[in-house]
Image (tube, rainbow, N blue to C red; front, side):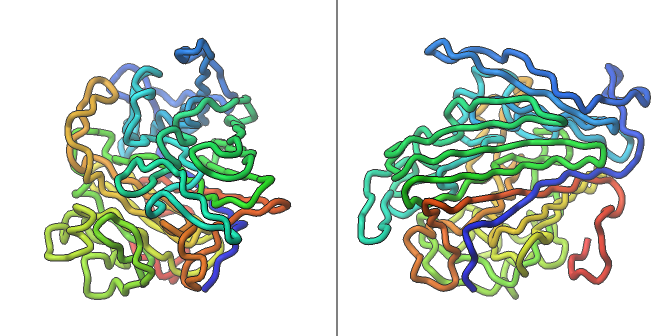
Amino acid sequence: MKYTLTSLSLISLFLSACGPNKDDNGGKGDDSNQSNQTTVETYGKLSDGSEVKIFTFGNKNGMIAKVTEYGAILTSLEVPDKDGTVKDVTHGYDDLAGWLTNSSYFGATVGRYGNRIAGGKFEIDGTVYDKLVINNDPNHLHGGEKGFDKVLWKGEAIEGGVKLTYTSADGEEGYPGNLEVTVSYTLNDDNELKWVCSATTDKATPVNIVQHAYWNLSGDPTTSINDHILTIPAKYFLTTDETLIPDGNLAEVANTPFDFNTATVIGERIEEPSIPLQFGKGYDHCWVVDGEGLRRAAILRDPKTGRSMELHSDQPGVQFYGGNFLDGETAGKSGVKYAHRTACCLETQLFPDSPNKQDNPAFPNCILKPGETYTHTMVCLLYTSPSPRDQRGSGMPY
């Protein structure tokens, strides 16, 4: 199946109407509502003196999101649990100085091409581009040493959120063409947090822009993600070589540790003998999401707090990364050192190394040409009761 480049993926975050509140008493409080207006503050300055802003926006149900111009990063998302206690459910840093060291891509918008490109090179219409930075030896990862996660975007407050723009110059990190990119984050009183991206170019170029939040729905960043329960509606996943470059094959998930078609504890099979798990040092693979168009791509649940996150997307793949390379050395929010597998990523996207597999009909088109528009929206639904969008018989068990 060949997917078109113009794809729309949408992140919505939903919560049950459980009266979430927040004050200084352990995250619990009264029923005061959060305005949908966006506040803008100075977050700090870069070494060249450029000012960086941070945008805060929430809703009447107690959710609060913060986004900074640096890296178009979602710096935090505060969400109530089943008892109404509000906690931040993302990994990251407390200040700009921390985000400037963000080698794990916490919360970032990554590009120009999210995920890996083999050998840092590709070919378009007979022209070889081989100057991409090798920053994940021997491959190119998430746009290079200074990808979209490490540049200053221009932010503008909009109703219920923020719009950010960035121009990626021709030749930046080895990519051809001037790429004009727009990303928006919005949050409404239906508890929908939407991340929407679009881009245009003046020269053919690969594009795969990805939102890279790290999730721990417990709100406790010291706890293992292996206790979370995951569902991914996918019959196939991409097998890779030892450097995590897809080998071009779609492998069936049936009877393997990669079958998450029914809700499964993440850590239940992670130690099973498996060459793909060995290569990834755990889960770090792309699943081929069943169906087309905007549909459910994953469900993540923390049984202790009752928080669930339902991911919707119209992208062909979702990369599930289980935090295998978190090593306890990185000090994040409140000085917490993020230990092995204390968060996971669910990144809706095109397939890894698609620029080098355009002749493979199983891989999506990733080449954006002049006159075309790339679009990507990602959708997460957070709730503490049955999903408000659940349609029984949809094939997605809880």
